[in-house]
Amino acid sequence: MTASPEIEPAPTATPTQSIESNYQADTEAEATVDWRPIVRRYQKPCLRKSTWQICNTFIPYVGLWALMFFTAQVSWLLTGCLAVLAALFLVRVFIIFHDCGHASYFSSKRANNVMGFISGLLTLTPYRHWRWQHAVHHGTAGNLDERGIGDVWTMTVEEYKSASMFQRMQYRFMRHPLVLFGLIPLGLFWVYQRFSYRKASRADRNSVYWMNGAIALYVVGMTALFGFWPFFWIQMIVTGVSGGLGVWLFYVQHQFEDTYWSSGETWDYTSSAMEGSSYYKLPALLNWFSGSIGYHHIHHLSSRIPNYHLAACHHAEPYFQQVPELTLSSSLKSMSLRLWDEEAKKLISFSDLRKSA
Image 1 (cartoon, one colour):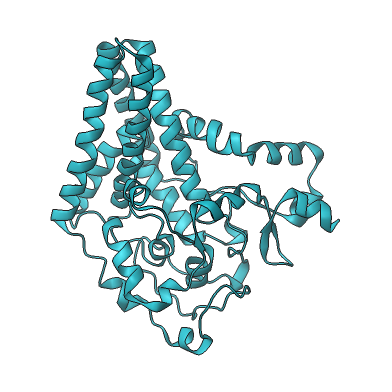
Image 2: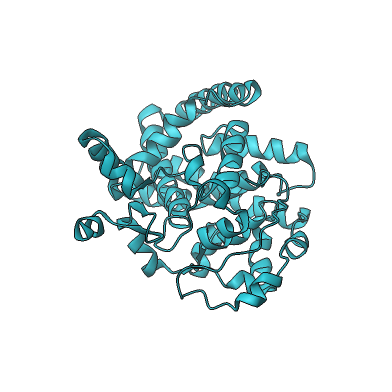
C-alpha cells in the first residue's frame, strides 16, 4: 500500500486500464502520463479565494439562522424552508471543514486547525478525530483488506452468501436508501461523532471530548435564543438534510457499478483514484453548494488541492477526464447497488444476485 494521501502520494504503479469499455483512453498514452507534477501546480492555497469562500458561506448560514429566529414565531413552514436552504450552505461549510482537514485550505497549519474547529462545531464533527478517519479512507479506498474506517461498509458476494440470516438482514437494513440517507446521517452527526475510535491517538480521542464540550455550549446558547424545542427541530432539519446530502455525495462517488475494488498487493493508489472515484457532473448551482467535490477523482489523486482548484486541475490534462462520469439521473442507479462481485468486478444489486443464483 502507498503512503497516506495526506501527503502528496508517490505511487510507482502506472494507471491501469479499466475493465469496462466506457473508458475511452489509449493504453499507451495512459502509461506515459505522470500526473504528479500536474496536480502539484494546483496544490497551493489562495488566501483571497479561501477568504471569499468563507464569507459567501458562513455569512449566509449565520444570516439564515437569524431569519429563522424571527420566522419561528410567525410561520413554521417558512422556517422549514429556510432550514433546508441553511442545510445547503452547511454542506458547503463541511467542504471547508474537509479541506482544512487535508491542510489544503490555508498555507498556515494553525489557520487550517482554527477554521477546521469552527466549521467542525457547526457540522457537529470533531475536527482532529475526523481528520484521522478521513486520512485512513484516502489511504485505503477501494482496498478490500482495509475496510471499516471512514467508508460505507460494502460486502462482497461471497461474504454475503456465507453470512448468517441476522447479518444479512442487518446489512440489508443498513443499505436501504431511507436508512442510509435518512436515519444514518442524523445518527452519524448527533450520536456516532460523539465517540472516538480506540485506534485513534490520544490527542485525536481528546479532540472528540473537546468538541462535545463546545457543542454543549452551542446548544445552551441556541436554546437561550430559540427555546429548546424550536432549536431542536430546526437543527434536526438542518442536520438531516445536509447530512443526507453529504452522505449521498460520499456514497455515490465510490459506490457506482464499475468502481474499483482490489485486495492485497494488487491494490493500486492511482487506479483507486481514477477508477474508484467518479466525476459527478452536477448542475452549476449544486456544484457550487458541494464545493466542486464532484471532481472526486482529482481529490483522491491529491487531497492537497483546495476545492476551488479541482475543476481547473480536471481540465488541465486529458487523462483526468477519462474517468467514470455520473450525472444526477445516472447516479440514481447506485442506490440499488449493494454487493461487490469479485468475479464480474462490479457492484451488483440483491436482485442481480438472485438472478445469477
